[in-house]
Each structure stands twice: as structure tokens, then as C-alpha cells.
Length: 235
Image 1 (cartoon, rainbow, N blue to C red):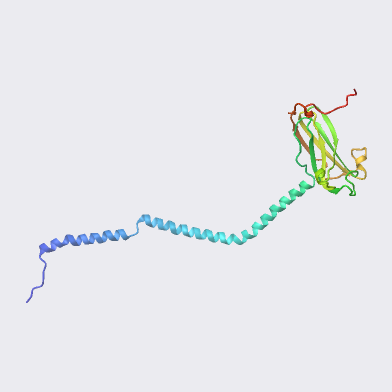
Image 2 (cartoon, rainbow, N blue to C red):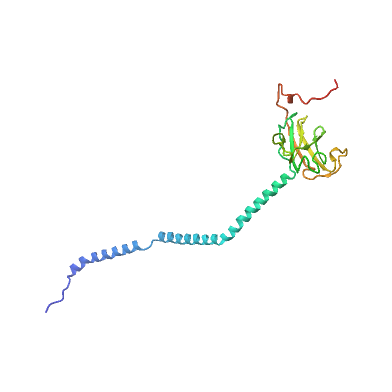
């Protein structure tokens, strides 16, 4: 009768460290394979970020039809605003002053008024009257300067006989601030009427007010602007 195979106690004890070493290695491997806390946090962040991005995209796309309708509307309003501003400028605003803002230098003031022509009725030369009153507040000096119809503003070069530019020239004889007020009247033969209130307001730039600061002239030598204007002195 064969006796069952038995491991001597000494041999069994020698094998125990190997068994424990195997278990330790397995446990170590299991711990390495297990998700680490830092990896879990990173994965959570990625999931949340992806969800937020997806949600944000969905929100943006949900507003896209409305956005498509609003952009043309905003663009139309912008163009309308610009058109209104241009219309206002064409109907009566003063255009930039031409000339050097200095004593004795000729300044040209242009205004956008009614569009007309040399042969129109009412006629721009007889049935409209433009006067500009320039005042030097420091001294109280006041000058009333007649204006005139200037067609397109460049008729000397274009030979234009129609347009909407009305013009006045002024050569200030004092330095400092000058203010001005425009009178623009309309009516039959108002241009030759003696009364300052003849006719009716022509609208546009009638009553327009402005100011400019005049500096000393910097001209010398043969440039007569350094000498002032010619005046009759009776001798």
C-alpha cells in the first residue's frame, strides 16, 4: 500500500516565501492597474469639459436662426443711420471751412442748401438771400457779409450751372474768437429787399451758428496778407 505523498515540513517552509512573494507581486500589479486618484480627477474633468462644450455648442446653434435674422437687421439700421446723417448734412449743415484761420486770410464758408440751378424758379440769385453776421466778442466788432449761390461748389472747373452749395467769404481783421450766424431767406425778389426780415425763412441752414479762433498771420514780404486789406482813406 502506497503512502500518500507528503511534503516534509522543512520543504513546505522553504516554499512559503515564494507563495507570499507571488501574492505580493499580484497585489502590486493589481494596485498598478487600478485607476489612481489623479487619473480619476483628470478623467472627470475631461468628461465635464466635453459635456460643457457640447452643451455650449448646442446653445449657440439654438440661437443661430435668430442670429441670422438679427445681423441683416442691424446692418440695415446702421445704413439707415448713416443715410439719415448724410441727408442732414446735405440739407443744411456747414461744410468744413476752407483757408487758414489767421488774420487777413480769406476764409470760405460753404453750406449745403436747396438744390437748384441758375435758371430755376424760384431763382437762386433773386429769390433767395444769404447773409452771415460775423461778430468779434472781445471788441464788439460786427460785420454782415452777403453770401451767394455757388452751384456745385466748383463751377470754375466744372462749369456747373446747378447744385446745392451756398457760399460766403470772410477775411477777419482781428485775432481771437469770431462767432457767426447765418440768415437764409426766400421770397420773390428777396435778394434786393431792404428789410432784414423780408420774405420767409428758407430753412436749411437759416439760423445756423458757429465760431472760429483766428491766429496772427505768419506771412511776410510781398504777401499782402501780412499788411492787411486795402482801404480807402480819402487821400
